[in-house]
Image 1 (cartoon, rainbow, N blue to C red):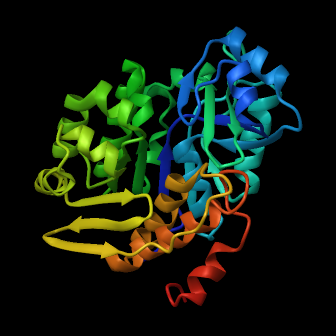
Image 2: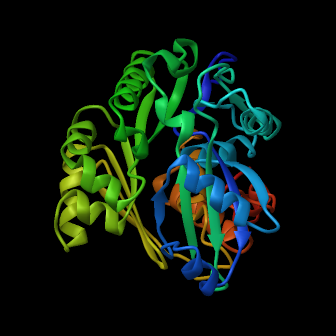
Length: 334
């Protein structure tokens, strides 16, 4: 694949959220009224209370698609991320941290206005379950004006975050980015984000998959929700009729990839998670890094599994080991 200097191999668009992580036990969750194991949206006041209650916080740039893009950027591929942060301490931290990890942060922090940079307080229990409390702040205000044509239009692959569909402006930003990408000869795709997100936007997502997307990544629960069936195979068949490449992760079970009439199952090495944060995001990073390099689907799936297995073996949503070296050890990258 010829690499023009002005082309990005992968561009992401999504919520720019600072992840604030801490470890806690179940009694703390109960005491604070935090529902275990799910992502809850919270208001500003609640965000301040929870932030204050966290001990030994670690901070990292996050957001589902941002984690994916950073994972690919860290492999040395040319990447950019489109997202909104406020010009405050957390926002500047976010933009600088993305750049430092090898991904262009496409939008300058926004001055003025009263919405602060988005943050997600993540409480990790001893069993590795993560309970996320997300204050969406400014990142949820992303709109079509935030999509730089010279970024989305120069993307070979574009990866969109399902969560952005919760606002009409986000939806418009999405379609704008997808059309610019396609006009520039690129291939847009989406992550379904979570089953509740699919429940909220099922019709929109189906239309999008049918008309605008070249690839879609989701887990078994998301795909079953999308096609309102408990029969995963039936759901994936329907998806594959609508979209060129359909990817389904199923926790410890094999990853299923349906692409242009072929069906690939990639076995997963089961590992006991220390912190499940970011498993899906890093699966997508491994998969998309393979896709960006034109590798066969089976190799893409294996790269996804390797990246996901690494990230769940420690705290935090970004890899700590050299993923490229792990790929080379598995014979997947030169």
